[in-house]
Amino acid sequence: MNTPLPGHTVSKLSSVATPPLLQVDNLSLEYRTAQRVVRATHQVSFEVDKADRFVLLGPSGCGKSTLLKAVAGFIEPREGQIRLQGQAVQGPGPDRIVVFQEFDQLPPWKTVKQNVMFPLLASGTLKRKEAEARALHYLEKVGLAGFADAYPHTLSGGMKARVAIARALAMQPKILLMDEPFAALDALTRRKMQEELLLLWEEVRFTLLFVTHSIEEALVVGNRILLLSPHPGRVRAEIHSHQYDLQSLGASDFQASARRVHRLLFDDDAQVEHDPALGFADIRIAY
Amino acid sequence: MTTTVTPRQEYEVVLEPLLSVPVERELPLGQRLWQQGWLRKGLILILLALAWEAIARYQGNDLLLPSFLQTAAALYDGLLSGELPAKVGVSLVVLLKGYLLGIVLAFGLTSLAVSTQFGRDLLSTLTSMFNPLPAIALLPLALLWFGLGDNSLIFVLVHSVLWALALNTYAGFLGVSETLRMAGRNYGLRGLRLVVQILIPAALPSILSGLKIGWAFAWRTLIAAELVFGATSGKGGLGWYIFQNRNELYTDKVFAGLAVVILIGLLVESLVFNTLERITVRRWGMQR
Image (cartoon, rainbow over all chains, first blue to last red):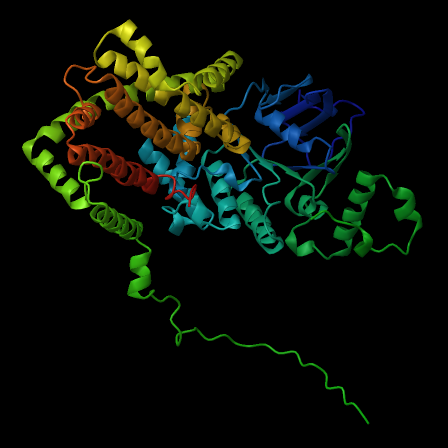
């Protein structure tokens, strides 16, 4: 069963014996406006393995957020299937915790600690005592132990993002879904958060599905990147980016990858390939 | 004429811990006192009382406008003799019954409205039909249905609380951000648990303002009902006290009755609702 099919190329990097954690199979999603039905994604397939940092990258309108919401269970597939550990996803559930972009994802009436405990108690995962201990443990991990009793409105944007990440990690979900979690932060805070996220991953080895519109962020955060084309979202390519981290930002191979991603996303290969005058600085990185 | 260009030098500064200047300092006493809302409002009340006393003395007709001091004396006598507290008690008991029943019904109606399309249509139709209808206009009908007694008063009180509160609560529910709803659903909350754990706290500013409006409407309706229809409940409340004393031309007692109506309004506003706001929405940074 584990022998690869003849003629089937198996990547050296992911010679996987276990079935993938998340399978998205020919997924088409649609959303309705008052007048029409709009197709957000068309027959998108991808697989996420355990401890992957899988990034969905594409320009606005490629349905990447819709895709993430479908995995979270907020949107019914028009066709195709989403399977988590072989089980079809049905409705939202605490085994797939979402970190949203918006700061108001933290209920303002709960303190930081209560916020982290909230999903643990609401889903009945833990009793109050154990939930409190675990909340404090993960707050320690994101460096907010001293703010356990503060209300969210007293925190900065970066701290709120950290609380949301601690809250998601405390649930120890099968997969962590992040919908442009750092997009509303300033550039310096964002870089710091990317670094911390990678450190947390080194430590906890959670499985991550990460949506972004920034090429740089995708290369730094992800180990695999799925590129989506817009209107409707279709898979354009899947590339590896496990070799990059924040230290490789200026390196030439990093820039080459960024240029390749840009070409794949915007399909202007003629320009980039045949116009040597166009430097890296001319390429707009949505960031 | 030669201009010498001195190049700007780069430099770095080693920062010492800043100890010479205090990071925080206290405001002067006067400014801190002026921050106290009750003090500012108390001053306004004193000014109003002084103006009242002055106008009453200038006019000099106790029957039309008793002075502030005369009213205060009548109020003191009424409170001491136990007549006013008894009337207030009768009114408040009826008021609370109607108010609580109205709150329960309003929450039922809005919970229905957030969960089903039918509930939404029902709520919007009913509120647009009944909200403009003055509660007091329903009292003759209520007397016909429920007879002379507390029940007809409670009926009009429910009517005056229900629509205002339901409208505010529903508007508050609609204003709850999609992210917060999705977060709640993400943790497996749905139906009534989603309403209780996410929607109600998130919509609390609107709900509190609905409760305040409902309280004022109910209080107003009750006094008016007692004034217009006398002792519908047999014993008679504060409105009946005002009505009776006007008939006997005890104008100072009429004013004392009105003062009690105002005082209770002020007390409930500043003690109950302000406290509620302070320990909830203001602490949570949802309202300034």
